[in-house]
Length: 383
Ligand SMILES: Nc1nc2c(ncn2[C@@H]2O[C@H](COP(=O)(O)OP(=O)(O)OP(=O)(O)O)[C@@H](O)[C@H]2O)c(=O)[nH]1
Ligand SMILES: [Mg+2]
Image (cartoon, rainbow, N blue to C red; front, side, top):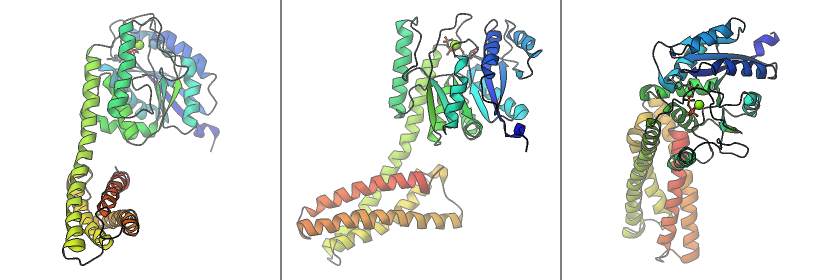
């Protein structure tokens, strides 16, 4: 193998709409930075222009005469930011087979000098890296009006709260480095929802994070464009809000179903616990709890499979069998160790007949619920 074959191909995708005057400068500044990028990276620029009426494409073609690593994709109609990115990334995959994508604005709001920092952060093991205005060292422009500052800061906070993810500080940033495998995994998930506008940014990031990819952030001092017009419209705020609330609703819906199935399981288990432990007095409270748990586990498995995780339903007989065993094993860890343990401790501390034993029972059930939720979601019906 030659050194060449080990190179990682990096494609910086730059969507443009009426960015004449900006795109030429952006390309020049990036080329200067590329010279400082370590040898093992092969740097490319792909401009995705939606047939800008101002002749943006001609400015790119002029650069392409001298620069072999600059490429141009022309879309016949205006695609919106997400549409432009998705068409560009698809094109890049076909023509350049990249290992890493960058998302980058043409209007020089994004400091090209940060490219090596993004790459270094990826090397630390992150799956994607965000240029963040809201971490130490990052900033939004001083000259932004109060209203725009407010929308940006509060908007990001609302997103963090609604999605309940505070690990990422800048959800809406447009300066990003993304490993190819993240794109491969996430872009098919966007298909049906068609994030063609600016919602693409938050939609892509949200789905990537929920798929388990790790995002790192590098500080970005965002500077205002000096040339041309912003394409960010008022519908952006509305679309973002619709997206996050809708996305969260569907995430919580699964959780509600989880709780409903679990609650039914609890009713079943409790009925058996009472019947065998206190009504018929066939078993001690600890044994009655364990037996009730077994029946509840089976009902939970069936209902979770067809309802809670209906979209990830296990159907093949072998898989169903394997998963049921795994389900029984993990659930029994909870029943035997957590429930049995807590009840045994209760028997020893307050005595079998004492009413206080029911407090131990409730504590045991709550802990089991949390434990089971986590295991089912992360393992048994993992995506
Ligand atoms: N191809 C294409 N590019 C677009 C489209 N909308 C925006 N862009 C480009 O996406 C980048 C970001 O757009 P901007 O209008 O600068 O949005 P912004 O940076 O969030 O807002 P400002 O800070 O006000 O500039 C720029 O390079 C735009 O030219 C589009 O529909 N198609
Ligand atoms: Mg801009």
